[in-house]
Length: 66
Image 1 (cartoon, one colour):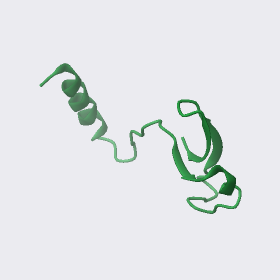
Image 2 (tube, helix red, strand yellow):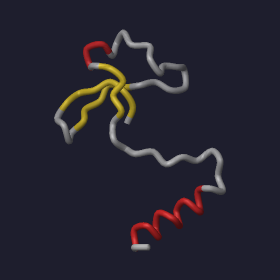
Image 3 (cartoon, helix red, strand yellow):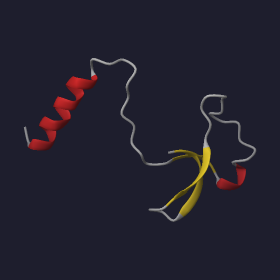
Image 4 (spheres, one colour):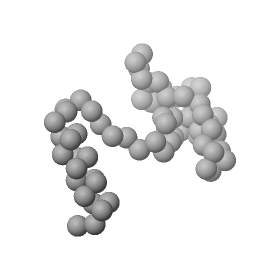
């Protein structure tokens, strides 16, 4: 087992104790094209709302989650 795998294993052992904690990648998750974002009701609730944002790595705008 290399160093990276041992770190991942240790972190997973710590997080397995919690049932309401999740690790999420910070890469943007577009839902639909930017132009349709204002009309989209996909994944929309009063608690969770997708937003308009800019993805610097791809130099593009998107509508979705970060």
